[in-house]
Structure formats: structure tokens, C-alpha cells
Amino acid sequence: MVRQEPSFRESVDLMFNRAAALMDLPPGLEEKIRVCNATYTVRFGVRLRGQIQTFTGYRAVHSEHMEPVKGGIRFALSVNQDEVEALAALMTYKCALIDAPFGGSKGGLCIDPRQYEEHELERITRRFAYELAKRDLINPSQNVPAPDMGTGEREMAWIADQYARMNTTDINALACVTGKPLNAGGIYGRVEATGRGVQYALREFFRHPEDVAKAQLSGKLDGKRVIVQGLGNVGYHAAKFLSEEDGATITGIIERDGALFDPEGLDVDAVHNWIARHGGVTGYPDATHTAEGAAVLEEECDILIPAALEGVINLTNAHRIKAPLIIEAANGPVTAGADEILQQKGTVIIPDMYANAGGVTVSYFEWVKNLSHIRFGRMQRRQEEARHQLVVDQLESLSAALGKTWSPTPDFKQKYLRGADELELVRSGLDDAMREAYQTMRVLWHEREDVKDLRTSAYLVSIDKVARSYRAKGL
Ligand code: NAD
Image (cartoon, rainbow, N blue to C red; front, side, top):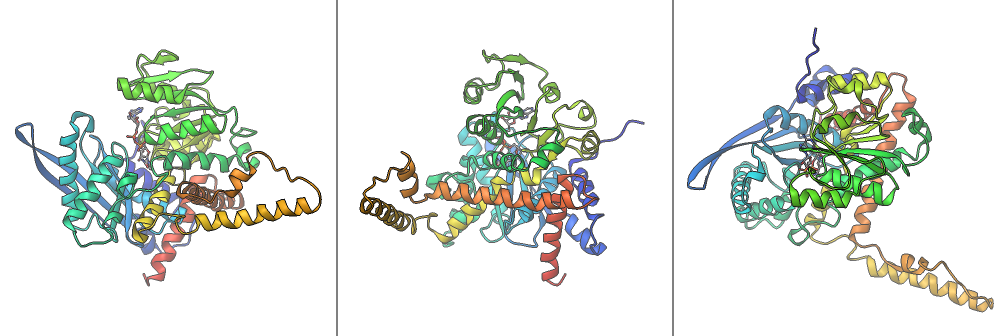
């Protein structure tokens, strides 16, 4: 009999159930945590090109154990209720795991954004934002969206402006959405945050030789062969940082129109620029192109980074995946069935709810910045520099008193004397969040006999935190 693939939401529920079976939760509470609290469907018309076009959008609220609830807005033709509910559930678990004080939500609009002019997209986005905001499904204290597939800074700026126009006296209006451009209330480091988080997650994984050995790998990130699917916001930044800063070799890049492969390593920026100019990877001159993109997921490599969409590693191809380590930069790229097959093969999977949590972590910092109305580091930076200068002056006069010349390494003074700016603080906070969360997961993975994989431990950690928070409310 052919095994049926569950839907995305069912897949998330199956993984939840697998972890919940190892916990001692009252059955009612388990059900309360698992189900999606509410999903709002909106259909609205916008007059475009001389006629009214009707669009369908969703905003799902999975869990309100903490408010506001948080989660991106996706623009794609494939958006549907099942998908936004699955993604909203993942947001609940992700925020709990990473200690971002939010419940989980997600939104989506059924649209192919590439089919519209910028001014048309602005009208559609503003209208969608209006429909959500008037029901408090966009609100700084109740529901705070962010970018996801098909949306970015531009859309977030339109949403923030739309909310501000509807709430003219709300002093915290900018905190109604995150992922905004810097000049519209954004924060340094948000655009790159999810890809940066993938890099920090891998760095932390490679700090633990026992974990690396479980993936039948050894050594550090340097020289590891990496295949990335999707060179969008998340995939591009992850591939760029891993190749430029950690010495990894990007051997394959898979896009909508096929894949590029070069065992010597692809130039991530050159490919990215090519896609921006030509709309795809086809024709890129410095690598082998194959039209059968998805087949490259099955090529030999050390690390596979699916960073495009869900369900790409499924019952049909899981047994052919050769990568010993998969880091789920996208949400839900491995179905529940594929997850079982890969586990049996010994593949280590760094799960989505952890791997792509960098975005919501920096979104949390942006939301706090908007509510405090001051950029991070503004009060301390010069004071920090002055104190460091005192230490350097003292060292210099001490060595002079001893008749010696103090000669630190050339960049010591430049690095030590400079007070941290917002970008450095954001990176430090993100690195801390990624390290801490990984450590909580790995403890269970290593200590509990019945926890065989990082995904189950991630669920255990997050379900436990959500359960505690419901219990604290008396539920
Ligand atoms: P994006 O729209 O910027 O990029 C997606 C990329 O995937 C595009 O380059 C697109 O051409 C490519 N793609 C689409 N279909 C493909 C296919 N069939 N095969 C190969 N490539 C394909 O989106 P993004 O923001 O980078 O999001 C990617 C994934 O990461 C999604 O699952 C999203 O939910 C998840 N994610 C994003 C963020 C964020 O901050 N943007 C945060 C957490 C998780």
C-alpha cells in the first residue's frame, strides 16, 4: 500500500504528539496546547487594471499563552488555511524554545507577488493590513506580524504605515509589525537575522564534537560541503555567511528554475546578483545547471539547507537523501514520514523551530526597541568607550613607569575602545539566544534514552514552557 503523506498541519501535529507522548501532561492541557485557537479568513476586493480583483488572506492565532502573538505574513499562491495553521503552531513552539515572550500566529495572502507592479502590491497589502488591523489581528500588544516568504521590509513598512493611519494616537504604533526598514522603525541586523541564526546554530552544533559525531561528521564548519535550496532572504544570508566567514563550500544552489552545482564552490553573491537580474539561475555561466532542481537535494554533501518551502523532503525522496546533517532553515521542509526514514538512516536534523528562530529573535529586539523609543546602545556606548580608554591609559602609564613600551596587537585598541553599537548588540543577543536554546535541546537529546532526535527534544522543551505558562494562568 502506498503510504499517504499527511498535510503540513497534520505533520506538525504528528511531531507534537510524538513528543507529548513522552511527557506527563494532563490530556486536556495537551489538546489545548496542540490546537489552533482561531483562524480568520478574509476575502477583499481591490480595483486593479480596470476591474475588481478578489483576494483571499488568513491570519491564524495558534496560542495566546503569551501576548502579543507573533508570526510572519506570507505572500504565495500556495497559501491556505492548513499551511498558516501549521506555521502558527511552529511559531508558538519556536518562541517558547528561544525565550521570546510571544504566542504563535501566522498570516498569508494567496497571491503571486511577481505578477503585480509595486503600486498595485502596495494597494493590496494596505487593504489586507486594514482588514486585519480593524480586528486587532495587527496590534502592538496583541498580534505583531513580520516578513515571510514573498514579503520583506517594503511590505512591513506599508503595514506599519497603514496601522498608524488607522490609530493616529497610538504612540506605540511602530511596534505593530517587525522587519521594517531602518528608516521606518526597523533595527540593524533584522534583514539578515534568520540566515545569521542558521549560521549561529551551525557554529553551536560544531562546538560539540559528540553531536558532530552523531552526524557521522568531524571537525569544524571549515571545508564542509553545503547545498542550499532557495536563495531568498534566509538561504542567501545563510549561504553567504557560511562561505565568507566559516570557510564552508557552497557546492549546490537550488532555485525554482533548476539548480547550480560546482564541487569547487559557488560564488553566492554572484549567483544572487544573477537571480536578481534574470529572475532565476538558468544561464548562470560559472557552474553546471540542471533543470531538475529538486534532484540536487539528493547529491552528496555534508550539510543540506532547505531554505525555500515546506514538504520538499518527503516520502518520495527521503531514502535517497545523502546529507548526514540537515538544518531546516525553511519551516517544515521535512514531512513527518520523511523524518522517520531519515532518523532510521542516522541523519541528524536540526529542526526548523530552532534553526530559523533567528528572525523572531531579532523581531523581538525590534519590538522592544519600538516600545522603548530608543535605539540599543544609545545611552551606554560613549560611556563604555570612556571606561575602556581609562584602562588603556592606565596600562600605558604603568608600562612607562616600568620603563617599557606597551605594544598591543595592531587592532586591539580599535576593537577594545569601540563601544558596542546596535548591530553588535543585536548579533550578541542573537548568538546568545541560539546558543542557549541549542544547549537546552542537546541536554535532553543526550540524557534521555527515549529522546532520539533534536526535533523531539525541541518540542519537549517548548511544550513544557507553554504548559507551565498555561498552568501559571490557572488552566
Ligand atoms: P523568500 O521569498 O525570500 O525566498 C524563498 C526562495 O525560495 C526564493 O528565492 C524562491 O525563488 C525560492 N523558491 C521558491 N520555490 C522554490 C522551489 N520549488 N525550489 C527551489 N527554490 C524555490 O523567503 P524567505 O523569507 O527566505 O523564507 C524561506 C523559508 O524560511 C520559508 O519556509 C519561511 O517560512 C522560512 N522563514 C523565514 C523567515 C524570515 O525571516 N524571512 C524566518 C523564519 C523562517
